[in-house]
Image 1 (cartoon, rainbow, N blue to C red):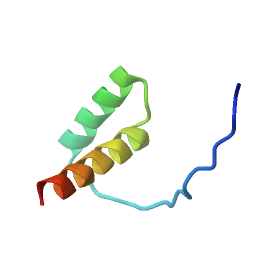
Image 2: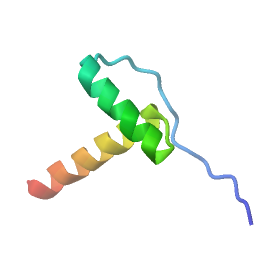
Image 3: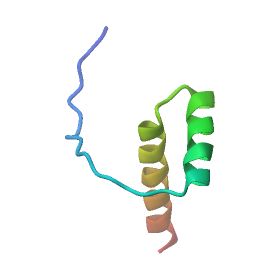
Image 4: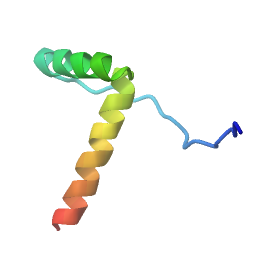
Length: 55
């Protein structure tokens, strides 16, 4: 059964990325059928989780 889930509030923020990185992120996002925004969010969450585990 479909349930609507509450999500965390999303906030717009501008970040500057090198063109080569953005091109790579875009390719990965397209191949995984997700938005670049979703991919970047997941990458950041993964990096933060792994930084905490290392400390």
